View 1 (tube, rainbow, N blue to C red):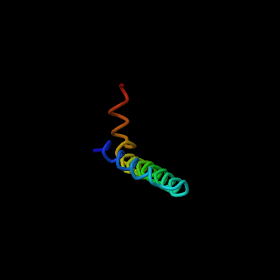
View 2: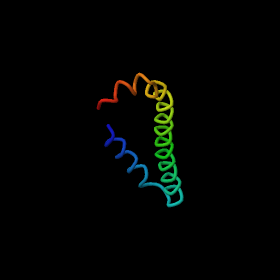
View 3: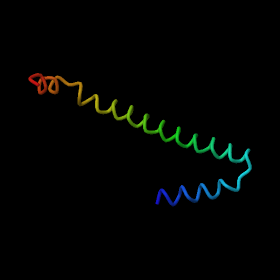
View 4: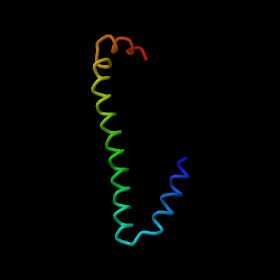
Length: 66
């Protein structure tokens, strides 16, 4: 499926003028950056929630012999 989508994008890009091609490239880069930022935000939010379980005396005690 991903390869099929790439093929469609390449075919569509072939017909674009240089300015439109640059705009399409900028948009694709924006989408990649947005996805990376969303993954980072999810990781940071998860860490905050998980810290409540990690940073407990019971956890420290359970792991002290390792």
